[in-house]
Image 1 (spheres, one colour):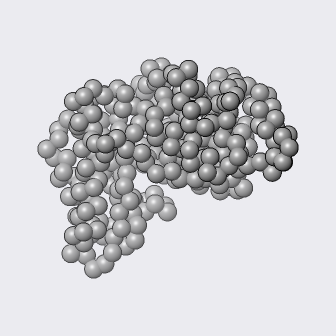
Image 2 (cartoon, one colour):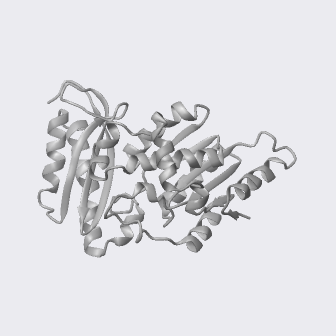
Image 3 (cartoon, rainbow, N blue to C red):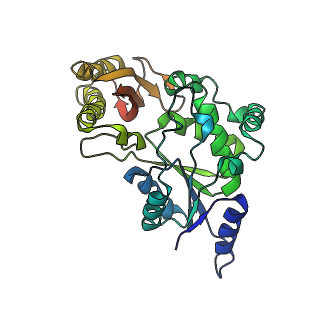
Length: 301
């Protein structure tokens, strides 16, 4: 039966209780941090975590530090009771649902100041591009809470979805310095039948908006086909994907770009190997992101 805890002491006790069982001295812990409003994409992370560890801890915490001015912190869906039910069914062992005071016992401003003194918790230049350009300060707040949760849970593995590619890149970079013994697991994107990447924000979309949102993944796949089937170079693959959206004015495109996943820097037409095509658009009032890997091989067409 899944335990639900809300304080640091309860969390430690729940994990230690499992470790104290006969034969569990070397128990491995996997951690899945979430903000709740769970969908099948989140549950796939829980199932993947189970493949790596004996004990699966899931957190639900809506982090105020990663919401900027005018963003949806207050209206972000909070569905703890429903989330707990689906987590238990998915095989989670411990649900950690702390308050802000538990995560930031000295206050949010003090947490910000402490993070500013730790270079690894600063997102730097990468954190100011793409999603960081649209949401200033978001990635610094994200790194602050992820590091804090890692300290509280002390997991052996942590599982994150590939949909938030820029976030995942920054977490891997931070963990390599701050938590070198922690293994970061990347879980594949889970999609609706339309191809739309699953997201908690999809619940804001009505039927018409959902149909529009499904065009984002179709544009990515057009870019992938241009490169991998027709041999297009990177700039032409981007152009092909962009052209796919020209007939969809309801999707207000923010960016469509190709980056090197090892650096998150833009690539040029001399690039060969595996790249990541990123897309962000606003449908209605909802910001959506997605990505797809694309392999570029010479000679280009």
